[in-house]
Image (cartoon, rainbow, N blue to C red; front, top):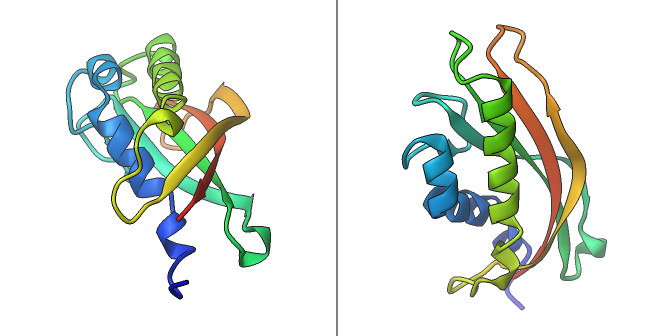
Length: 141
């Protein structure tokens, strides 16, 4: 087994790619190019990050990664709370389809997505609107 086998199980790039090309997510966010790892325009935007926690099963094979999805509006407050909640849950629904998709060459294989925390309203300290939820992504190389 290659020494980088667990590094190849990182699901974050695959989650970003899947959600970024998913037609329902793009339609809900108002276009493509609105899913990524950073809070940056254009808005509304979906940010995907890994969070503390998870499980690496003693570095053997299966990883459980905590993944947080954040639906952002712009500093003017648009779109509102209800629209960001809807965008977040459309993305969560799309993410549930990922385990049924063929894995790209070199992995990772995503075997399951499980809810970790329900969506909640959590504006940034700047006042920027944000709706947040997290899931556990189970993957292996």
